[in-house]
Length: 424
Image: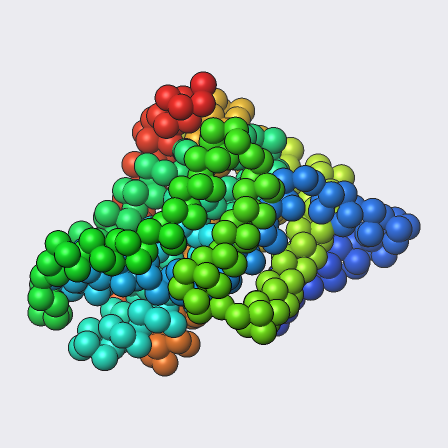
């Protein structure tokens, strides 16, 4: 039966079914063949969605969309350009900086690629940057957001494991910073080699004015982060505060929003949230089937049968997650694999918070791994560039991402230092 489940799932992926439909159809085939009553399907879907912390996900998705349409994202990009534009390849550095400040509030790396890429890729091409490079740096920089807090994938990981959302947010801060800085270093050397343009240095007055314009956009991230870590409000409450804040700033400060536009944004966010909740529901059913068939125990036995060395086990898990991340969206892969692999990692003494950061980092790197990384396809479609050219240009950034992954895997303190310092 489990073979039929996996074969149907893989076949649906090959046929480019949406992940949620692929999961649902595979589960339906399994239930029919195994003779389970179909009432199991809605029961397990509902139990997967009926988790309090998941209420924050629609809020953060709506907040990210309000930021995009309310002028907050443009202000962040403009501020980064004033700070970094005078350096060779400054617009590429601003691209990465904007992703670090935007911090994944839009929901996922794919969303960040689409939202920031729609602004940055055309701007970089107009200024003479290579089209492949422009798309590659946008795809690579979008992977920083889901690591730096606040992060929707971290919320999903917390939901699946029972870990503290605040601790996971803090655990991703240092690895996210390392990843962002590493991408900036590579982008700078490529820009020097290709003689990409730079802008005149902005005066302190211009930087100060840009900071004032951006202040309200930056304040949103700090309110959410420190409110959750400080115990002032829960992640769900934080998402609602983020929505209210984005509406007020978009309406009253930047004046890019109106009630007609808000209606469209809310509708789009509802569609995204609904599709994500269906995905979570089907993934919970899929996971229940895997547990019923004792697949987690089988995988654990097979991996530990090869080696019980902590670092070799992590190496095998890293290879698996990067491979899966190349063709599956981060949240979908987390929902299916994270609970299984967490048990394997825990059996060799890996801290669960450390492993959550490793898992998320692996999966977002997979999104920019040639030739089928999802973010590469999104960036190439925005820039109207062949996927081959974007994949080739992305290789130096992929190398940096893998170096950061190795450091995070081998040095647990990079992930655990801040949670232990602030929350223990």
